[in-house]
Image (tube, rainbow, N blue to C red; front, top):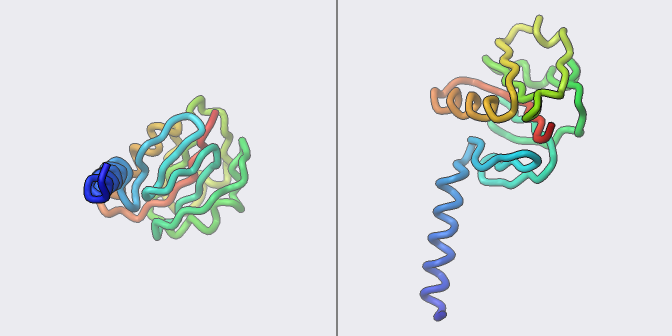
Length: 130
């Protein structure tokens, strides 16, 4: 393969990756693997701020109020509680000033992307496994 064809192949593969994993949105995801904003995050849980900036959260089956305090500037807080809905949520979060949606991870990712496409100010915590 010559350099020109290699460059074309790499360009096409990068373009496909970007189309499947858009900036500021979730892309490919399955149990234990999540792509956000084109960045693959294997096994870790994520916190997505209303600005769209991601961070890795400590793996836990409990989401405390203290953990989400810095996400409460959003209009809507999406909580992906695992593919099998194992993660539990601190009840104080439900009494916060933002709309809270607690969904299995697959539907949480879909809802987050839908709301982002509507230009809504949304934040999320995504539990990537059980």
